[in-house]
Length: 137
Image (cartoon, rainbow, N blue to C red; front, top):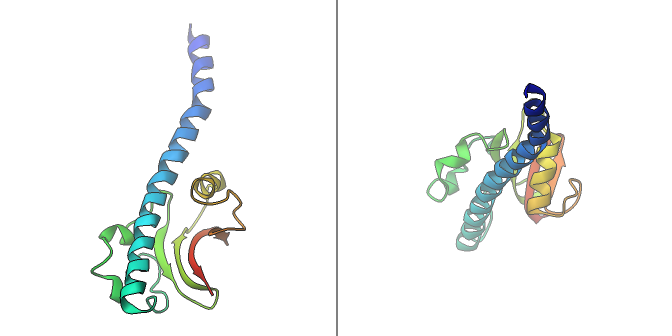
């Protein structure tokens, strides 16, 4: 009896992990979409993207009334959200992940939001951080 329960548990773990990864990725994707819409709306209203980056977990001053405090909290897949506007991207939202990265989770995230290839498309993994590109330079 114990052996049968062990076998059933072993068979169920991969399915449980898959569901868990998809759930975390879905929650992060929802956040990214909400943030991207807020930044895009501000861009249209103000005639430009917020300047520079403010660091992980910090809301750009121009966006304080448009973003919820979810932007300042850890993302469902780990790390903190970050506004990026620099020499590489005109507008992007990053998830800065400090420490170990679950590459399988990042790949699920990319497959669900973009093209499934972490080096191309709008979702890129740069030095184990995720970048969702709203507009390239």
